[in-house]
Image (cartoon, rainbow, N blue to C red; front, side, top):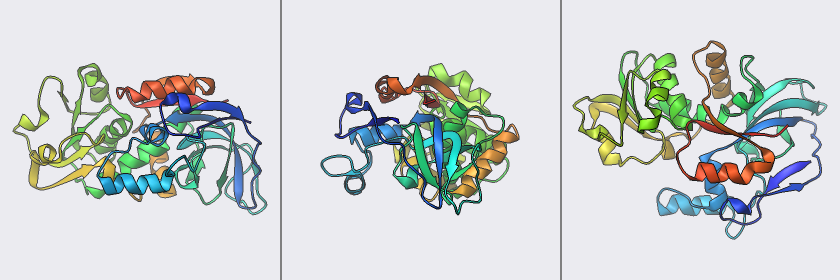
Amino acid sequence: MKTVIYTEYGPPEVLRVTELPKPSPTEDEVLVKVRATTVTVGDTIMRSLKIPGPWWQRLGARLFLGIRKPKRAILGMELAGDVEATGPTVTRFQPGDAIFASTFAVNFGGYAEYKCLPESGVLAIKPANLSYAEAAAVPGAGMTALQCLKKAHIQPGQQVLIYGASGAVGTYAVQLARHAFDARVTGVCSTANLDLVRSLGAETVIDYTQQDFSATEERYAVVFDAVGKAAPAQARSVLRQDGAYLNVLNASDGGDTVENLLALKELIEAGKLRPVIDRRYPLDEIVAAHRYVDQGHKKGNVVITVA
């Protein structure tokens, strides 16, 4: 099967397309023919080993990923595709099912034509109103945004500010805050993305290239930094006294669950949530896709078409 691997850390050019044997499902696994995957910021961090956060977080990540070289050669943290075969004990899925899934807890592996996933993993039947490319862009950023916002205990009508509102997590967070939690949303993004963020449900949009969001007199029940780039003191300065500050770098733990994935599916099929796709690349152009994401200006998600 065609696969993208990396055996050393570095720039996008460390990725290379090769052929590996097609896997076979164990008794409790499904074999998925991958139709689409994505390039997330997480993929680029693992590829480059440029890990954000404090030293202890960087050390922990390096131990997990591999000290001198990657422990897991195939990136790709989410995917959509078709179940091609199932192990003998599998009951939730059958051949022909269109699914979408997170690979975060199963050693990644979306950058390949086939991936085996445990039946008990974070996978579900694909939303009926999404293409494979769109569905592949849901699990990672969608569940991250949902998990973070759930921790804020948002009440209807509360003011929520989302910093980095045009990114992968941010575009989901704006929609979830508005349509799932019934909040009044202020999005912070660059000039080029103002209309996009408004279209997702933001009542107010602040252009950070023209205005310091912390200079506003508004006070928010929740400030969610969806890209981990705002200074915490700056973010907290616009909070109400009882407000909640959330940073995507440390608030999304525990979010990789089937329950969260199914909640997203329900919202998508109800027309309350949609993935934002910036660019699409074929698997053979994975290096170009990583170069683009490395620039740090993508709107929503970058999708890789596999088959």
